[in-house]
Length: 189
Ligand code: 5GP
Image: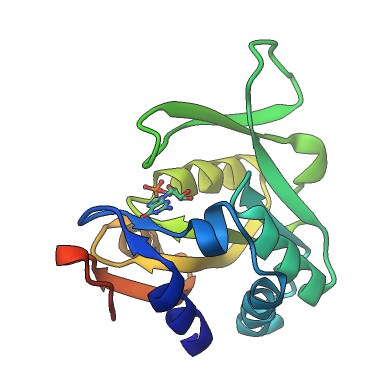
């Protein structure tokens, strides 16, 4: 997506060789018009897949997942990051390490909203090692829902996450692929 590449070059900054700061576009501030364009692009890429629901993980995935759900005319479901010790019998939970925070968090989805009838499109902001994505994929599998594929705004293709998920036979579509951040320079694939 050329528009997104231009915006990344103008508004993102490189924190180190592995991390791109995208607060201006994805992780702190959100541009509604740009986000709607991302949602329309994901909806176009998965138009023939009979998606019943868009799913993401709170919080940075929510705006673009919302835009995608709106374009597809289906509900949006977001996995919550669990902050309670009270066991919820009705929840599917997975523990995932956080790439940027260096901690583990538990993500959870209520069984009530994800059923064997669903064919879901999983949207997320950034993929690095793929831990967050693998956690939600496990939840989707355990729910019995079908996974149509993933839509990722920024794939850092020098890290293994998206590649390993594709190797599992799962479709992964990224709006931009970044092949390197070395020396503070953003290189697209
Ligand atoms: P993964 O689980 O794939 O290693 O990391 C995915 C999550 O970590 C993303 O949803 C995103 O929130 C965060 N993340 C990973 N790499 C970056 C990065 O380069 N920049 C920012 N801002 N967040 C990142």
